[in-house]
Image 1: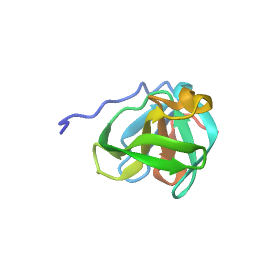
Image 2 (image 1 turned 30 degrees about the vertical axis):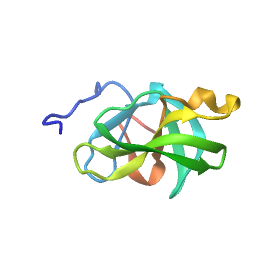
Image 3 (image 1 turned 60 degrees about the horizontal axis):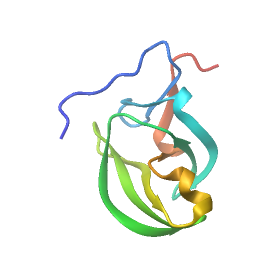
Image 4 (image 1 turned 180 degrees about the vertical axis):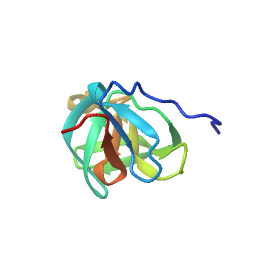
Length: 113
């Protein structure tokens, strides 16, 4: 387990864990706001920080069968969403290696208006 936290630059608009305020992602890594998580709306990110991945499993999601790993906040261990490891349909391949974080677990930081 990590013993330190990665901090994104304070000059960047960021998303943090709503539970412990650990930085999770920079706004520039946001790919899409039109995703659905198990607890409502979710965002797709290119990369995230301060997370750990659980074991991978195949799940049938709204867009078909995917191999995903749940992701957890390194600081408070809250389940935040998942990482797409493999998409089985060619139209969904763009998701591979990307991360879903549910809105209920995020807060916007640093200069949002």
